[in-house]
Each structure stands twice: as C-alpha cells, then as structure tokens.
Image (cartoon, rainbow, N blue to C red; front, side, top):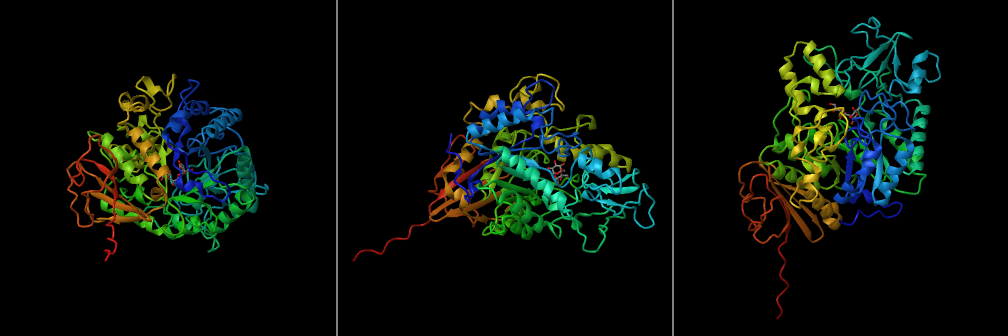
Length: 586
Ligand code: TEU
C-alpha cells in the first residue's frame, strides 16, 4: 500500500495530493438483506478502499429522505435515513474510516430540501408563516390562470422535465423546484436560511466529518436584478424555456460562498475538503470559486467534458469527438493552472459508465478502462473514483423502461412519449445516458445479485457481474483494480503528478491523447491510443521516445520504447530532457 496523501496541519492543502472515492450508499453494499445498501455495508468493505490507496471517501446523501431523488431530497439534515442505519452506525463508519488513515466527506444538498422537510411543511402552510420566505413562492404570472399550463411565474423547465414551478392550492401560489416537485428550492436571499445551513454544516463538522461535496451549489443565487425572475429562452417554439442563465453562478453566489467560508469553516482550526458541484460553470467563475485567497471552496466539479457527447439535450447522444474532449480538458487545465484547482472525474452517480461511453466495453474493456484511468489520473487536479469504476463496471444495455428506477429517466420517458416521441428512440437515449447505469449494485463477486445483497435488490445488478467483479480482481495484479492502485500510488509518490505543469500535445489528432507534466527537472509524458487500431508514435509534437523509460503502462507485456501503441494502449513515460553538455575542460 502506498503512503497516504500528506495530511499536514491546518492551512495545509492536503487535498491536492489526495484521491477521492465516491460511494452511492443505496447501491454499495447491503448488510441486512432489505435489498438497499446501508452504512454497515460500507463499514464492512472499507478495506477494499484502503487497499486501493484511497485518501477520502465522499458519501452521497445518507440523511432521512422520501427518496424521490435517491436521497438528494432531504427531510432532516441531522439524522440518518433509517434504511441506511443510525447515527451510531454512522459514527462507527467514521471511526473505521479514520482508523485506516482516510477521511470522510458528506454530501451537502442545500439548494433545495425535500417537500417533506419541516421547513417546507411550515412554509407551505400559510402566506404569513414565518418560514414562508424560506422558499420561492410566487403568484401566477399576469394573465395566467393559477394551476393551468402557462400560469407558472416563469417559463423555466425543471432539470427533470416539465415546469420548474408547482402550483399549491393551499395558498394559491406556486413554488420553485429546479429538480423534482418534491425538491423545493431554498431561498438563499433570506439570511435565516443561510444561518440554518451553516448550523447544519457545523453540526456535522463537530461530529468529525472532513468536509462536504456541495450539490449544485452554484445554483443558489437566483437573479433578481430585474425585480422579478425573468423568463428563459424557449427553443423550437416550445412552451418551456431555459432558466439556467438566471440561476447559474447568480449575482450573489460568491458573496454567499464567502459567507459560508467565514461562518462554517474559517473559525475551525483544520483544513477540510470543500468541493462545489457546479453545472454550467464557466472557467472564469471556477477561478473565483477556487482561488485560495478568496477561500470559497477548494475545487469544483465542472461539466463541460461530460457534455461533449450531448446533442441539443443529454438524450441526443453523439459519438465521442476526441479532439473536442481534449480541447475541453486542456482549456480547464490552463484556466486553473495558476489560480484554483481542478477536480478530475469521468464517472459519478449521474453519468453513464465511462468504459462504455468513451472506451470499448467489448473486447478491450480492460485495456480501455485502464487507459481512461491513466489519462484522467495523470492530469493536474484531484481525481475522483466512482464505485465500480475501479473494476471497469459498464453500462447495462437497458431495453425496457421497466428496468429503470431513476426519476430523471422515468419523467423524461413519460414526457417524451406523451409529446409523441418514438419510445424506441427515447429508450436509445436512456440506454446510453440514463443515470441508473451508474446506480446498479456494486459488483463484489460472481454470485447472485453480485454479492450486493442476500435479498432482492432495489435495482437489478448488471448481468456482466459474473465476470466483472471485485473478487476476481483484488488478487489479480493485472486487473483494472490493481491498475487504479498503481495510479494512486504514482500520485502519492511523485510530486510531478500532483503539481507538475500540464501541456497538451497533438491536440488535433483524432485518436492520440498525449500530454506532458513537468515539475522542475522531471517530465512525464503520457501517450494514449483511443482506438482499436495500432498507432505509430511519430507525431511531430512527440519527442524522441527511444530511451524514455516506461513508468506505467496498461498492457502486461512490455514493448521496445517508441514502438507503436497497441489498441487502447496507454503509456506513462519518464521523458529525459536533453542534458546540456557542460563546457568542455580546456
Ligand atoms: O446533480 C445536478 C446536475 O445538474 C446533474 O448532474 C443532473 O443530475 C443531470 O445533469 C441531469 O441531467 C445533482 C446530483 O448529483 C443529482 O444526483 C441530483 O439529482 C441533483 O443534483 C439534484 O439534487
């Protein structure tokens, strides 16, 4: 096992050399046979993560929740969802994590609550309730009929299809929900709301957690500069419009984040990990969020590279354009090169599996999974591994909507089919992009339900678990799991991987992904072949590789340096810069 990241004292940015592992608790490990993952299941598998060399675990939400959006709809911020366990189970998990030298980061979902949260229950009860203003209540728009299509205060479409406003006949007003109707948006304009959020954060930090991943935190400031919330632009004569420009990186967001830092973290004597999930963020805003001088957060999850294969919507899937992917990754590497910091990820619980998406989950599943890991982990930033990514878990190949559980896919299917779309066509989009691809049970072994549960799982395991599973990989040094272990060790042992400057090479090449990382006199060169065809290393951008030793590759058998890359081959090479010859002695 490699040395863990340097967890120095206060003020030390330990997270720069760390690797984070994301757990989606519902799908990780079920200890009590109810078919749903739980905290004790996670505790029982901590050695899987310690064995990989992981530094930090990020737990997707485990709070009490009606589970309309699998826990991203929270009804109590200070307890544990009974299906997942108890606070005592949580404390045991936290102890187990800390005993292994790892850290634990919670998901903080405070753009919205559940509609079953007592705050919202109060808020909805009457127009003069003291918590009325904690959410976004608005009367029907002028000329609109309350509760009828077109009556909504703005034309914004929710992320999960349909209008972002729900009519509530209790008071005859609408409330805003950017996500499902069971996820009303909190009104961050109200200082009491902000205070309540900082109190929740303090409560968990006091309990010993090591930071937060902040869900859609760049959507908390809605644009009120025009007085009322403005309509968004609607494409192709549709009724609903895109509200994103009016709530993404809004006018007060940096003020709120600075206040959160001041109130939540600054008074404490340690360094936490604070990662902001920021859909639609620009590089300019990302620099502001992550500038250490400003102290807002440490890094952001940006979305540009995982939107590369989207058409007009995420469901119109385009083939991977490697040149575009490289251009995007390069842009972000450059933008945060001197100020700020990147998060590096391919997979999470909202994305399809990367080996199916950008790799080859057929004949070259193992090679392409290792290649994708190599390329990502050698960039500058903090890498995130999503559960099962270290095993090369793949998309399911969904053919029927009955196999799906995710509210986003179910809503999209219902809306699209109601609007006259061909169900087969709709399924094609869901098959490629549906979030349930990432949410099938973690594949522990080849047994029934992949060793995830002894009961009946809430969502079926991917049938490929008979081959793709942890038991088959942890003892096999040639496995994808061990490749991840080596990549993590490489980062821990080599400051160039953490801090080195990034330079993209051959940006226009359609199959070669090549770049260097340089720190002082050490240069690493990464060359990766995103194709099934052999690829000669003769591009003019590449240095002479004849005597560049291999640091890490994804094929078992070594080859002579400089020879063509095999299908989906990736090599990390130590590039010796030409040594300047000393002046010759007289
Ligand atoms: O996701 C926010 C988000 O913008 C997307 O990832 C979104 O789920 C996807 O692009 C829709 O196409 C976060 C959480 O990660 C996600 O699981 C939640 O559903 C969402 O916020 C609401 O809390």
